[in-house]
Image 1 (cartoon, helix red, strand yellow):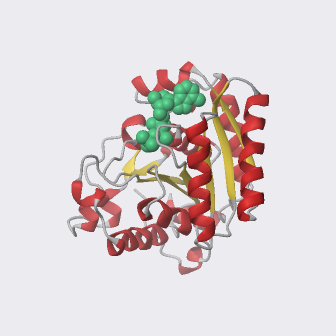
Image 2 (spheres, rainbow, N blue to C red):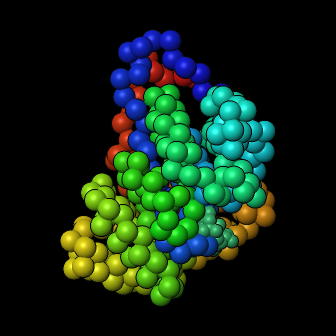
Length: 271
Ligand SMILES: Nc1ncnc2c1ncn2[C@@H]1O[C@H](COP(=O)(O)OP(=O)(O)OP(=O)(O)O)[C@@H](O)[C@H]1O
Ligand SMILES: [Mg+2]
């Protein structure tokens, strides 16, 4: 469990907050989020995954975590923030929002604002927070993209997935979003395929939105990603030598540039 530091000085910086989003569903957000989190933790960063796919949370399932309480309990006033943090693989902490929870799926602006405040509170006690969002471009997704310092936008080379990735980009940029958004092209069969998709998306973002989409990288189509799901273990942990895990490590190195290292005092306070 993450404990509150007793030295006020240790609160001077907050965690880097990354949102992982997509537009179209099923393109690999959750698989990428949990493996990125484990790789960050392996590198020594105190990492928390928050499943903000409200009502349809499954990051804990992919990671083999069984949370006793969830954000749904927190919102209902039935649990404190510290009580909904569960231990996951590689030392990653998980907060689930509950699966099949109607109240969460229909959460109003006020409820989402309370979740955002909880995320901010937590950010004083860890190095990295990863928000696994749901699909689509509704407020249940864009509120979390807006609060993140950096966003990872996942797409495959499927035409509908590219169109939907552009769709969410359009919604957030027209809403005034100016923070960096980094594209990951998932399930590709070659680097050239990924580059083509990236350039198409970047070109549209530049031309029609005046937005500078960044290139984070790619993940190849790899059966170990699916294989890891049946083992209830993130693929970077279950198959660290797989091609997908090797490419994932490159994505993490790209994101690590945005993470401040903790002061030794802060590390001592929270471990
Ligand atoms: N690089 C990959 N190679 C092979 N299979 C993959 C890859 N990435 C994701 N998958 C598979 O795609 C499916 C969907 O992945 P995942 O649940 O991570 O997507 P998602 O974007 O989080 O979906 P949702 O929008 O429903 O939350 C899973 O079965 C996963 O194993
Ligand atoms: Mg998901």
